[in-house]
Length: 352
Ligand code: IPM
Ligand code: MG
Image (cartoon, rainbow, N blue to C red):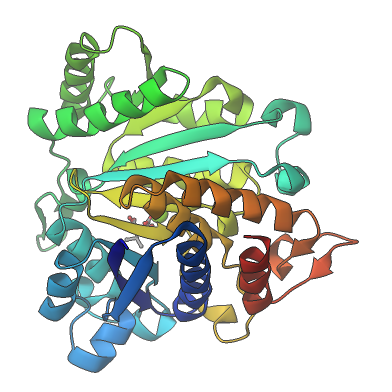
């Protein structure tokens, strides 16, 4: 029987509670689809700072590298807000992305039918099946460029090489081929030299994908178009910082940031899977967090890293079904059963 080794980085705040539910669902899927999973835990973020003094201990990187994939909860919280610049929990997150070479971040923004009314955007604008895939470059650009401080100034550098743009664009073109064959490349080529290189490179690569309809959009226009007419998008490919901002915006259009999953891929099998929301320290330990984004991240892991597409689909279907009548407080609506984090995990398992 196929066995997968998964490293759990539960992290801070609600991280541990949501990861526990995701593990439960993964175990249930393993039973049903005939594979096994063994787990190892490692520290990342604030909990790692508390235990070892640094947000990303070497041992964590080693454990992740030795596994088939990684599930991450969330990192950060007010407790570590006053840590000096590079010793914050977030530095651990950037560090693990870099150390594992996770250059491609997939952030799907999909509407779950029963949650349509949770979107702040009007029904007719969202349509019935909004499904946008944001492909965010994750190990380059201003997040990893040279930075510094002078006496009364500070700087961060946006720099991209042709090879970095090509490899992320290739991921996006390949995804577009499997979806509706439409790709929007987002940049700021009217101002930034790095964006002009980005655009030229994407255009050059497009010759290899004649079936994909490619268009280019400035990031400010894209931010506006996402709320004006989200239906026009299929796959969006963009830089690290633009992808950070646009994916938060797109998540809200889909109703709740508590619902959205993500995959960070390295080009090989190893991936890191995490909800796109944060550690929500204000509700940590209350048992009311929404575990669905993490559960849906497990579905993405089964699809992109573990080659178990049926199990992935079954989890996504189970989540849709459960949502028809059950809600955690963040997505609660009149007439539904209000359930806890743990009950939500149990319901998805039962539906599976
Ligand atoms: C994200 C987060 C991170 C980012 C932070 C926590 C460093 O906002 O994953 O989108 O900016 O990449
Ligand atoms: Mg972000």
